[in-house]
Length: 534
Image 1 (spheres, one colour):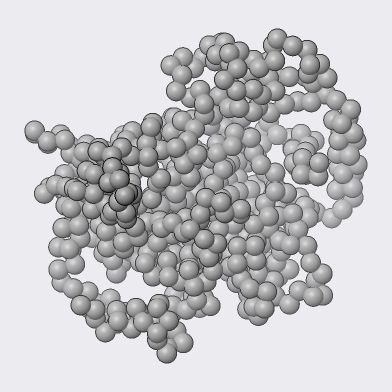
Image 2: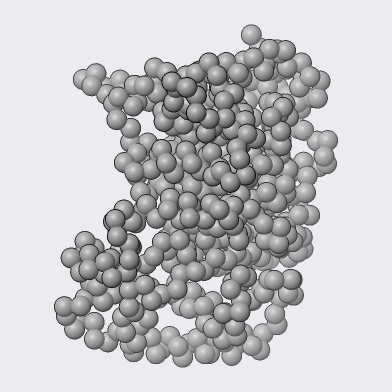
């Protein structure tokens, strides 16, 4: 039975309400059913298929495996929505005992299509369960979410292309958990709103987060910092839900997902982004008005490539994903977050392609063009510098904004760009130092030879000479001289320790600055632009 407030909210979301906006008053939160905790406890029991959900994650219960592998898959399934290639028996067990929903049964009745749809209460129960396990784990224990994903969902269950995206979603959700679930007494009324700035502070180390919060949008002539623009704005997600069309970033979809406490997964063929975190814009800390005109988003792109992508290839804009319409008269600032998780994680010898140092006529021409660009940049004014951040005068049209005639541009929607390379504790606060190897092992599973029992360079090179794949390295071309005009790098010669972060049009190696000085650093920026001009 719906309360009067719930009925009003349902009508507003369905478009049947005459109200121009909906405001969830604090009185409505106080009218939560007294048995809400009992309902969440029951959902936890049903999700784990146990009568004792309060056991610790690594507790050895006599004559009982707790939690079972299937129970862990249920928690991950509800919270992260991975595409799992489960067996018939496993799928049936999840449906029969762990609250998974059957969507359809094949005409042959030999298999079913099932999964975990967006269910706010069930997702809240899963979040409470994870919070309980985290509160009871030992300081030296690996995070329970990471352990469940790495130990029980990799291998033959997750396709290689899904591993990077699921890992990225786990990092974001863990940061949201740390920002919102500070103690086990959290409830639905307490966990709905989390400040976006608090989320960023919990996702990144303090120095990195501060740099992001102080950054400016490349296309904003007023130069407001991210913290100034989003200081009152909030996010609200305890799980992920999957979209099948291009409407994921529209304000209506963002409002609907925000109310359900969900972040959004874009469809597989989405050309620009992989995930979206809905953001509610607020005038002040007491403003809880829900309206589609107040919705914006964090647009997320996950990458598992071992080689960094160029800044010029970042062409995500609010217009390209339909977050804003051409006739909008009000600014709608947004954030683009690019998470390059594979950089510095997987040895290049395990991939089908490796970085190549070319010595050819084309390369000589590119070097001359680079020298000319450096001379031109030296004579042009530079942007102001902030601590640990060097902003180069890169064209903003290449980084998140369309090139337009300023006289015809009525409204500029500031786009704040965050780029993170690598996956360790130097760039993510939610990754602890003791978990570095676990994350590296998890992300390496996407490489073709990552599961080979002997990982020393000599053995891998011998295996590569059998040509399971071909790339520009000596392992693939030791038998010919066709590539005589190239200087092929030795296997493993390329240093991929590129853990770094950047904001806006910035290209800065913060944690390896002593190795990236002067012209070498400028060479990287120019080289990235050349790669996109070819």
